[in-house]
Length: 137
Image 1 (cartoon, helix red, strand yellow):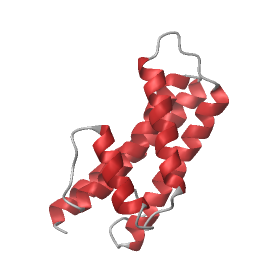
Image 2 (cartoon, rainbow, N blue to C red):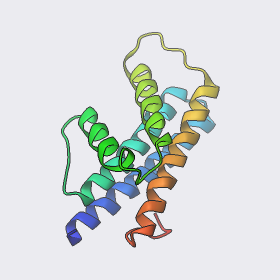
Image 3 (spheres, rainbow, N blue to C red):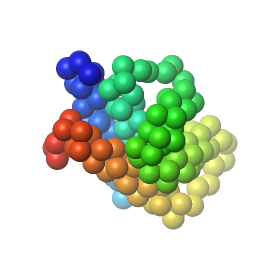
Image 4 (cartoon, rainbow, N blue to C red):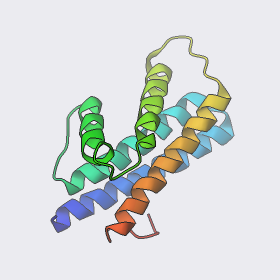
């Protein structure tokens, strides 16, 4: 993998980390819809960070998700439990961003933000094992 790919991977992980901080801040404010949105983008950016290492990107979210699942989950590189986190967050974010008169349950949003944090940590741990990521990210 090239230095450019590693730099892009780390940039996307830094973005993922900022999204997670934003999700947690929105939780503390009771802004459930934005917390859900930022939690999803925590996961999305973490997935894209790994795609950068493969020199792959997709134009649509579904393409990013499909490639990530095929390359990292179905092969056993990362836990299958991460697949459900992706689905949960994608569905909740879509509902919060596009549905009218949305009423989300704060408990569900809190759970999803915790899942996003677990996803971020799993990707960071993988990158650390590969010698790519440091604890700063």
